[in-house]
Structure formats: C-alpha cells, structure tokens
Image (cartoon, rainbow, N blue to C red):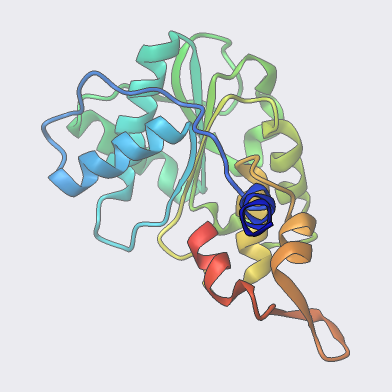
Length: 218
C-alpha cells in the first residue's frame, strides 16, 4: 500500500518533458555560465531566462535564436520594446548573429525582430520560434498585447521568455510566463499552488504544501 501511495503522489507531480535539441556547439564569445544557460534552454525547447541586468541576456537570446534557426532552417521572431529592437540588432552583430529589423513581414526565413506594437503585421503560423524580450510585458493580466501574444504563440514549437525583472511576488505574472511557455494555464497554476488570501480575490498566497513545491516546479 505504501508503494502504491508513493506512485499516486509521483503521478501528480508536474513534469514537463523537454521538447528541444542538443546544440552541436555554442559560440565561444559567450561566458561559460552563458553557454550553460543557452544549452539548457535549447534542450528545454520552451524556457525562460530570468537573467539580472548585466549578465548578458541579449547575447544569450541572440545565440539561442541562431541555434534554433540553424536547426530548423526557418524563421525566428524576436518581439521587443521599440527602444530595444535596434540595440539587439547591433548586439547580434557582435556575436555573429544576423538579425533583421522589420515593421512588417517580408516572409523570408531567418531571424527577425520587431516591436510589440507591430506583432499583428507578422504571420505567426510560419514561425519556428519566438522570443519575448523584456517579457514582463506579460505582467498585465487584462492587456490586449498579453492576450494576443498568448493566443498567437501556442502552436510555435520553440519559445523563449527573457527578462531581467520578473517579479517573484507577482504570481499572476509568473502564471502568464508559464502559460506563454505552454506548461499550464495561469488559472491552472493558481488552482494547483495557491489560495485566495482572505476575502480578497485579487491576492493569492501559497498553499501550505506548495511553499517548497512551487519553487521547485518553477
């Protein structure tokens, strides 16, 4: 009976199978810790890089985009704020990654970058990968952009979420990041790990059993 109980508990754990690939080689221009993060995120296929300011988030996402584009031979789209897009193009050149800045789709393969405001001008059905730069844009629970990104991204096989400033206390944002990556919906995450704090439905706190399990799952 004890063995059966442990089997039941193990079956209820949230396990997400990797859907990526093992890269043949990573750019030598990256630091060792950056190489390890890129390798990990490529193996996962759908992953989040929450790297603090100064740790080379842009360099890592450029290398990730290059590896996926080489692997698929298709299209990788980076969505970024207006002030970041051209900066990413310049940063990519430093690491040997060719990124085209577009405001409307040219339907050619390769790595392209555009502003969040321009996402409706691109054909998401032809994408092999999508990267959200400054992905804390998903924090807005009722935002049109958030809803549209989640809707358009669900069939894209490779996804990367990048931000230096995810809020560890904003569980709704973490739920939206989780939903973008196709792990589970924000609603499912809240139901599994959280409960309403008192009578306020907008405030959530971890269930007793989840105080450790949630962060392990994260």
